[in-house]
Image (cartoon, rainbow, N blue to C red; front, side, top):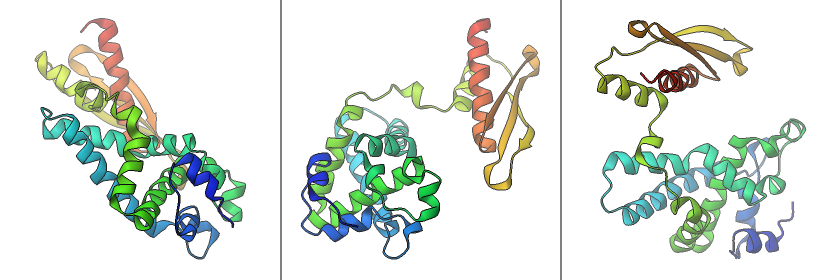
Length: 227
């Protein structure tokens, strides 16, 4: 693979001195040989630190809980995959035949991991300040439009707080069905409020996701019922 330096200069506004670092960052483990897993490890740590400092500086009155939720929101896989897509990173990733055939260049987890690996490569090539500047620049629009505190709480937490504020009993969750093969299971969960005779259901790729979906459906139902 030959990495075009013009892509990094255009997409990242950064010029690599050692292009082999960029090449490694863009090589998935399925391709064999020198891959981006170690750079991903480095980039993940760097990203957490830079985002934490940016939030600390930007929100001097925010408490630790809100800062932690904001950081988790900004560094979660979905956000990183979005950033990678904005950079057209998927088109630059070297994949093995299997991943290439299954559309790995569009898979969110691969995009997110590759994004972190690129950050790690910039850090090794240009130092902390260069990597920090890149992170802040790529996240600028999201840092300028941070969601309010309540929107960052997961549905189960928001449902519990809503019920407690009204003196209601807490919800009961139950996994009602599991389908699909072991590596691609789908869970269906129920959320019940016996006191109000209300019940909702939700699906997800894990128990937690299914329960969160059921809780979100219950919140929507309570708002409709004005309870």
